[in-house]
Amino acid sequence: MSRAGIAATIANSRGPGSLKESVAALGPTITPGTREQGRRRDIVPIAVNWSKLAQAVAGLPPCGARIVIDANNPIEAPLFKPVDLQGRISSEVVADLVSGARLVKAFNHLRADVLASDPRADGGRRVLFYSGDDTAAKAEVRALIDRLGFAGIDLGPLALGGRLAQFPGGPLPNQNLLKI
Image 1 (cartoon, rainbow, N blue to C red):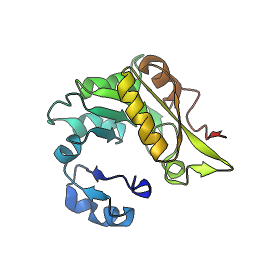
Image 2 (cartoon, rainbow, N blue to C red):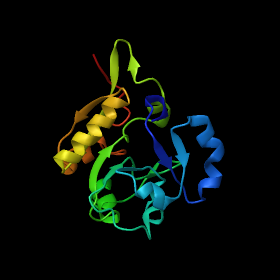
Image 3 (cartoon, one colour):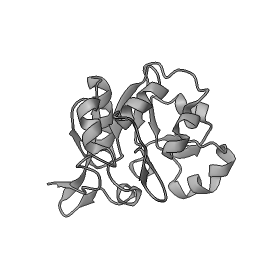
Image 4 (cartoon, rainbow, N blue to C red):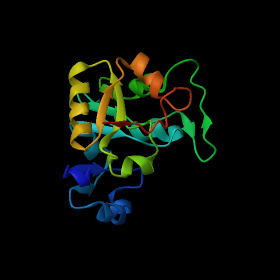
């Protein structure tokens, strides 16, 4: 985000003070904040350890019509043990936790180090898949993906795209593709 000059708030369970050093390294457009401050943004990405997901959003006010980007995968590090979702896709679980949000699945199929690297490589742009049931929300996330320098590819509704890009189980995780 900072590389593209986009203002963002980063929050965690330990509070803004615990983020000062990390935020300083990211650049001037990134600020530490509380979960409540982060939740007030128009677009709210959520990326936490799966076992801490419910706790991360617990007690926050309803999302209203905010866009929530589900960047999670149902695994537990460091062993990357899959979580049994009883046939559901992870985005369905996330949607239940952020009631009323316009949910878009994105930023979850590539490793963090790849996402942090230059999205332009070998004459193309790195592909980021996204999916969702709200066309307008997907358009806004696509615009964010483009602004960050990536090439967005719409995988359709959550029921389809969420399953394709989910790790583990989907065929698209860790596919580091370029759009030329």
